[in-house]
Amino acid sequence: MAQPNKSMSYGEADRFGKFIITGTDAKRKEVLDRSFGKRAFICDYLENNYQSHVEVVKTKQRDIKLVNYHAEDLMNLIEASEIPISRKGRRYIEDNTNFNGTINRELFCIAIELYGDISKLREYCKTKST
Image (cartoon, rainbow, N blue to C red; front, side, top):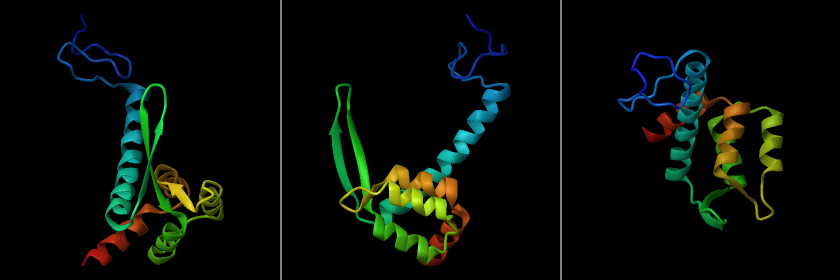
């Protein structure tokens, strides 16, 4: 049985059920948490302000729920909130837009995370809510 103070690899639990994360794994988890926080914020904002199209894709193991938004609406959001997003980010959004003019929520969030400035979107949301 593992000791609570023994160093373990990422994802292993001690006998109390707590995760022990050390070294580079702790750094990786910190980056993942930060990234997920940004993505969760964008997803919540989209959920509350835009009409989504949910598509369920059936696979052998499970059904996957895809949430899509109109790419034009999201590009308007980028313009209105003045999110600085690079040409590379705009290209990423264009490349991942479906033939029916929608883009998957996760892909849009990734584009903003990688090529945009989330703080501008946060400021825009604060001013819009007041």
